Length: 343
Image (cartoon, rainbow, N blue to C red; front, side, top):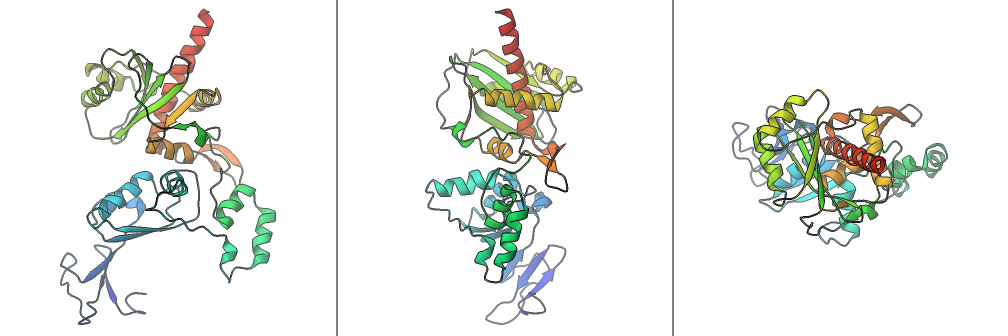
């Protein structure tokens, strides 16, 4: 399109960049891909990882950024590339889940953020789209699926695992008293170590108030970071890792943080513990925990050919914060059951 039809650009395949002609001279300035250009269009995929980090741009267009493969980390990488120019972003997408696109963009716009504009429209706003087809799909599709794909509306998709978690469980941050009980959930990993901090008030309500997702640190460094976010002298319990990750727990212990093996190791049983904690009505999440909110809104099961949920979890290896929550919840619920048994 840019080269042959519009005759305004040439493609540098190695750098995945379209160089634009100087409109004053009609010439291309660059002799090599890394030379100065009059203008350029940088082509990147959300799956390219470091490719997003290496670009510096004046503006960005994100196509289908609502898909599961476009993560909160990708969104943050795009913003970093635009920081110097305070560049604007255009995102064009169908809603696919209730993750970062809803919490970071749609919800903020609805709450009055003047830096965001959301333009939503049904398919029939396109004059070329037949209303008869629109109505036919309404009759044949599940309501949630039709609302997302043909009306452009956020709704809870089939298979959302924590569909019991709702926006009214979000709470503005407040100082956590030092004497409140604490539980820490840890999901070990080399490139992606996730930690969640939870605190319980005297009435029994649990608050997830802090999160961490980092990589490439030693176990001792992680342990120091985690302990550094706790007030001095507070009591805490920490749970983390699968049965096979005993070495991680021993390594963290050398850094001063004792982590217990979670009482429940099975993923589905752990999900039940989180669900029990949420449905108990005494579960809150600080609204500043952007990563956890994104994962809660997009963690779901694969669908079969009829659009019905299966037992398989979609991209389950990427939900590190929810793994940490699962470990923490298994410890909380199991400890509660022990206390009830004692009584």
